[in-house]
Image (cartoon, rainbow, N blue to C red; front, top):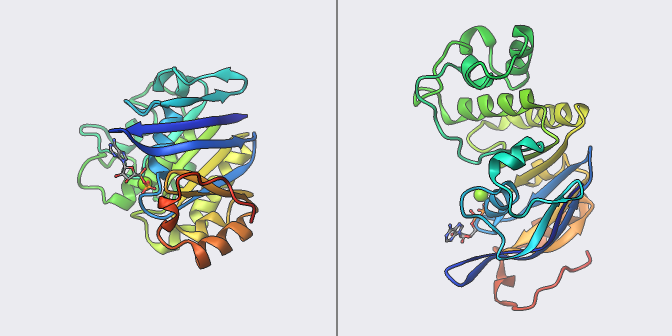
Length: 244
Ligand SMILES: Nc1ncnc2c1ncn2[C@@H]1O[C@H](COP(=O)(O)OP(=O)(O)O)[C@@H](O)[C@H]1O
Ligand SMILES: [Mg+2]
């Protein structure tokens, strides 16, 4: 289980995230829903331990171990992975090399093919393409999703998995999520779209850096659609989690 225990993140003496409490059980699908600027990507970086995204208070516990001060590499070794909202490009690597971490992980060829097919890329067209600026943002994101699937993560944080991909991708994203779960993983889908939050079993509503509510996706989505108005809650100083 992954636990965020009263985690906050400060930048320039301002809260980006404040008093986040959340628990992610093995084998389940969660969503973190929130408008632009709510702090979703910051939360993803904080869980993953990217650069200086370190809690100013609180702790992160993974399967009983306090990982708050561990490096991103140490966290990755323990099974945490992140799909970046804006994937970076790698010069000089083909898609196939990228998916096998430059040959470091041994993956049967047919598994590379089936994974590429799962994310909607024809293997014969893409395996030898370079992972550079000539791939579109959407293709890049699909390659990144495929690489996460091949890693068989214990915990996968997918930050806006549909961004840059056409709207036909919803069923693909659902299949990707189910694939990770089938391999024993937990998925945390970060999104501002209710359609994406629908594929989760439990949803957290993030608003101005705080968890505003959590529970059944249908209820959280209803609240998000009808009452979430670009974070007018931002000015409420002691916002606690509300029961919806
Ligand atoms: N490193 C940083 N320094 C200062 N402000 C930041 C930093 N990272 C994020 N923020 C701010 O925190 C807020 C949340 O950003 P972000 O996590 O990207 O939101 P979301 O992913 O929900 O759109 C924004 O107002 C953003 O400008
Ligand atoms: Mg974001």
